[in-house]
Image (cartoon, rainbow, N blue to C red):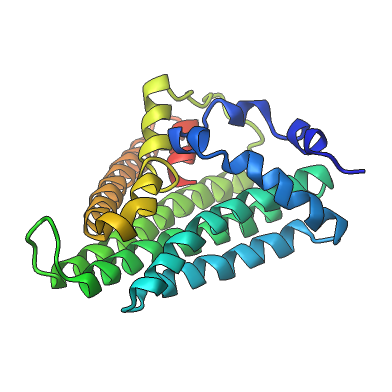
Length: 263
């Protein structure tokens, strides 16, 4: 018999310390265990749960984009459902001991779909609503949503390109280990990365958007957040590449801080 306690025991201790304020108030992880149990009995794989979460993410963004208030409410409601299934696939993988590097890739793809389309959908929602507290022309929210999505994807592409370059360098030079130990995130860095990110404090604003018309604020916030992330990753990895080519500097692996920001 599969129990709540069985699933809870599989959750890594190190992840418990980086739960966002949103995750502590809205117990998504705890709820996900109850959803996971019947799926395990139905022999649902972690891969299937991840693929399902992709469809949920796309459906949420499509609903948010439609010029209908009921559809926008459905879209807002589906985002937390996607978040729930984003936890479920990991629960299944750990319980069934089927977790693998490629499984984490599928899990990441699900997140990329949501984080890529959600800012655009919020920009369209803000445009469709029209009136806003910021007294900004509605057309600018379309631009803000588009900039947010492009900045998000470009930052992730830069991160992945550098990570792939390190792997190629290690393979070419037969390097198994590096003497450069990853830097640990400070408590402040952890709080900022977890709580200011898409699954942190902005989720509260998303829940309240249909009532208080916060689509405009979210579109602007995501634009600023992802543009800042893009500038950060560009500066960090250009510096790493410059140090590497300058000679006399060891190449450096990704720090835990950089991995978390790009997750």
